[in-house]
Image (cartoon, rainbow, N blue to C red):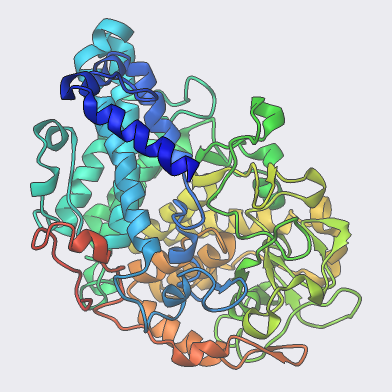
Length: 579
């Protein structure tokens, strides 16, 4: 009652005051707009900062959309209703309503907005405050950041509104349609931003890692051209029948710059790529930077919150056990005489068990990518995995993901009611870019050059046993491809696609590869049929795949989120096949 009387008294006092007096009270905790725009360096910093402003419900690395939606992994967690990502896993129930889709769209456009504001600030105050040369470089950096966010939006949603600094200044955001430009026209706008960055930026970032650079821009330009070289993203007009060789040549041209650079290259041991100690090594062309509190002297550090659900159950303080490798992926690492078992890899379920000899051999990258019962977790014997390290084995099996987590002995960056790690998110890593180059070389009939790249990558994998996974040496066998495997384009493509799957497994891009190649429906529907009956040591799991089906002509892209579609009715149109 006393609280109510105090509230009423306060209300009466406010009503007695004049409206002008009330309005003139200066707000607190708000940055003055004119002051903010007059500080272009700080506005650029704000655009960079949004790069890592992610969360498990809107992960900017897109792991639910590029991995869970593919044949590489299962969602994980406590069950199919844990988070809204289950429809992305089975496709058949995917609609425009999941809040995760809406949040991702919104947050990526928040990032775009920061970029646009920074560009306005640079236009107004850049030369005066920073000098012409620095202002031009900062403008190029921000154009790169904006293009990166638009690449994510295009990858996910295809039909998106192009909101640049002109739209922002003219306040026409709510009049800008999402069908104003075609898919290729939108890509050309993204390419234009990356091209400006490429033309202006130095080869090495001035701070040694955090800022973007010319080689990152060249790599992203190659990625853009590779994406549209295969078609428009829908299976009916995508794939080998629609290859644009001019765009493929662009991929080679821009990756020429990467090859020539002395600052980037293959890190010698595959396992080192995914350890915090090496996060800004020569393998990293560009990455979202993270830190722990010991490094940056903050309370919690600058953690990677995209992957906060993906720690192993019973290993970490809050290991929520999401992002679970599939049996199909494990089977794909099988080798025979050191080479992939392309056609029969999935005929039988198999997995290595430590201490039990087997004639079946494996690509060494399996032990760097997939945590399995009986094997050390991230190379540390004191944290050897058992079947109890799976949260719901009857639904998601016993495997766990390794790449996005540090070693357990290193601890967590944040370990309160949630966990997080100081693990950089690779946006562009050297080997990924080299595989893009090999893909384009194959389509340009330069088979020998493609084979050299792929064999260099396989040789690095062969050399990545003793340092971290010596305990698995007897289970590993890998060989380079003989020239006979690259006599035809069909065979060379098979080698390239296999290598890309194994090298970048669980790095959030498998589905987007399948879509680019125009084989998502055949690959995924076959996967659903086999994975729904999979067993590990007598435990059946993944039976929910009985309800899964991927529909070509619809599921290639995710639906425009419901809340965005009806925020201004009639402004946006929905992607094909969705309501």
